[in-house]
Image (cartoon, rainbow, N blue to C red; front, side):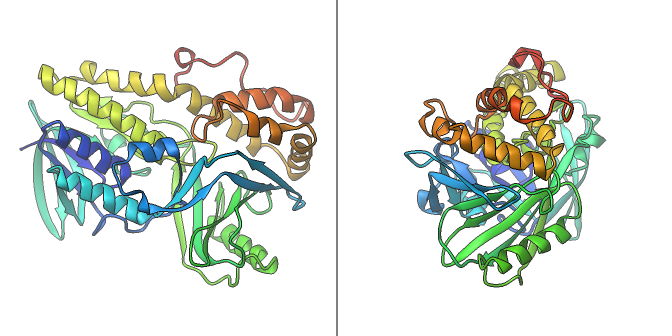
Length: 400
């Protein structure tokens, strides 16, 4: 009998499990993979705020970044920069391993190779049925946290709804010709509805990938061919990885004795697809919610509702504004993207961002809203219906 079973040994699941164990609770983590850090499709770009939350060795940092080059469909570059580092490329498989190791040292028990098949609510506990290395096992806990990533069927089975709006990420490790800064490509021919990237890592390696709503394998191969033609990578031969990324939050992230956290809950930046930092922020809220529930011996839905209220107060505005920014961009054709690119370049927006006191790598809403006011004249009024009709606040957004 455990206090909490966490389903999913990604960064968010392990971070939350470790927090609960440090508070004195007996925690079990179940994961279908055979080990932490396997089969990861993520660029591993995080902010200083994110790193400050993670109890790991900073040797996991591969590169620091204070600038990036954004390329229009024509190939015209636009460089954005800050006077100091704002982001870091970290070793993503090593991050998962480090957080799982830290949680285990705090007393968390892990079972890998364990596929959760069903969760059944009893009067005073949850029964978790799982296939563990070809053996059927049953685990019991007072509470359960689903941190299994996007695409898990468990929230739907528990009546918490589903996320139907998502984008596909595709990425490959490549050999690069230049160790310069990251390049971001805005071109609907390369990544329809999304964008593409080439991020240097280490040892003449880099990560080439894209976000798109359609045919990710075909478009990733097309991107690799384009980069090879430009001599930015040395070969198109690579192992391709894929992953679906939610663009909207789960309608409901709590019920009696259960919480949903991270990508499984749709707690992801719609602008970039990054989910580590937002997931960790919500894991802190989840840990605090469960701690208070244990102290009160009350795991009812009404008690755990404070979790959703808490994370929406923190992230609601970011998710809503970011989503509409994504939808706005998705509607643009390359001609309009080129116009926006030129407008930004000619109107001092790079310098504006460089000097912005409250610039944040993770909190985009204010920058988006300020920029949209400047960009309104660059977008034909008939092309896109304005998505935001009033100043967004946490209370006015339901993120559903």
